[in-house]
Structure formats: structure tokens, C-alpha cells
Image (tube, rainbow, N blue to C red; front, side, top):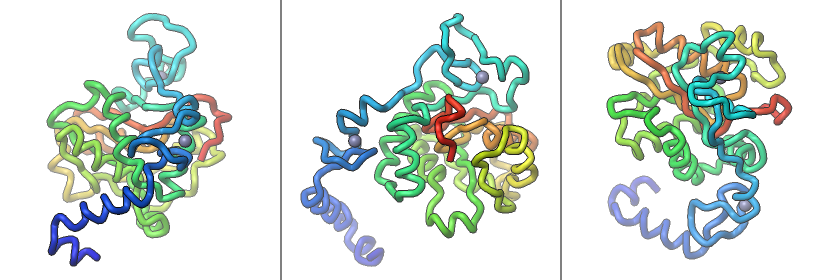
Amino acid sequence: MGGIFSKYPGFGKVVRRAIDIVLPPRCLSCGEPVATVGQLCGPCWTGAEFISEPYCRCCGLPLDYDVGPGAVCGECARRAPAFHQARSALRYEGTGRSLVLALKHGDRTETVPALAAWMVRTAGDLIEKGDLVVPVPLHRRRLFDRRFNQSALLAAEIGKLTGTEVGARTLVRRRPTPPQKGLSRQARFRNLQGAISVRDSDRARIVDRRAVLVDDVMTTGATAENCARTLLRAGCREVNVLTVTRVVRQDAGVI
Ligand SMILES: [Zn+2]
Ligand SMILES: [Zn+2]
């Protein structure tokens, strides 16, 4: 397959166009037919809860009341996270949750361009030229099971959209970590202790540089915190976090 695609560069495009004609565009979330590629159907659009202000200036958690610019949530007020700011496009509920699960467990990688575009829009000036976009790593065993790292796909697309460099393998997972599901915040931190590190060959490129950490969902922030600390310890100047979704209610069905 790769052979013919590389021999005739236009071939892939022709095949894709032919597939588009045969298979009508589908809703990114539920798969129902829609008018154009990269869209949500009406009901899924209605069920998509995009995060808007007011939210915590630091971790991006939606706040119940608008208490003015610079407001932080209780958690960040108690203890500021290692990362500078975190933002997420959608709540991990309804359509946001379906989209993440479809990508992660349903191999719906065709949703990546739309998800990345929403993330870039959400990021605003959180991404600047010169930043290094870094995906949260998967352990190679899980990568083998799943065949792709959804965060790496999102990071690659964000890099393309913003013209920023992507450190696809800057962070590595040295050991597999048991699933975080059902663990308390403290247990999640312990679970990740020492699991993630900076690849030796990437050390030079992160020194005194800003990094944007990319993931599909932010739950308690334990993974983001762990990755941010790792990057900062290795010399990163500042770490910001960008995720597709954010768990807002702890009963939202954590994966
Ligand atoms: Zn739909
Ligand atoms: Zn916060």
C-alpha cells in the first residue's frame, strides 16, 4: 500500500476522494451522516459542552460564579500546580466524553483534525511560536495494544496548525502504570512517581524553552502535574497544558 502511495503521490488523495464519495461524511461523535467532513450532527453539537469563562485562571476548571479576572479555584488557591496554565476545549461529559472514547478505544483517528482545531482555539496565546508541543506518553506495551498514542496524534496536528515544533517523544514512560481509574488524587500521584522522564536525546531541546503538554483528558491533573514537574526539572522554562476534555464533576465516569 505504502509503495503505490509513495510512487504516485496524488494517488492517496484520489483514493480518499473516492472513499468520501462512497462513504458520506459522518458525525465526529456518533457516526450519523452529516453535511461536511469534520462536523458534529445536531444532537451531538447540542450535547457538546465547550468550556467558556468563567474558569480558573490557573488550571482552567470552570467556575460556578464569575468573580472577576484572575480568579483561581479552591484547589489552585491551596496549592499552585507545577504547570503555569491548563485549558481544555470541552467538558468530559456528553459529546466530549464520546469523542475521547471514540478516539481512544474506537480508533476514530479521523476526528483528530477537528479536536486539534478546537484545542488550538481554546489555547489562544497559551501556544506561542518557539514552544515545544509535547504529548503525554504511553508505555510501549499499551502503545502496542492500541497501535497509536492519541495524545501524540493530537500534538502532531496542533504542531501543524500552529507551526510549532513537536517533541513527539520528548517524554517517555519508563514503566507501565496501572490504570488511574478509581484512584484518589493522592494515589494517582503515587502511581505515577518516577514513571515518566525526559528522553536523553531531547534534553538539549527543552532547556529554557516553553512546553505545551497535550493530552486527551485531564482528570485530577495528576498526570499533567507529573509531566510538568519532569519537564521543569529537566530545564523547561514554563509548562502549559492543553487537553481536549476536562473532568469537571468527579462522578462524570472517569476512564
Ligand atoms: Zn452525532
Ligand atoms: Zn484551578
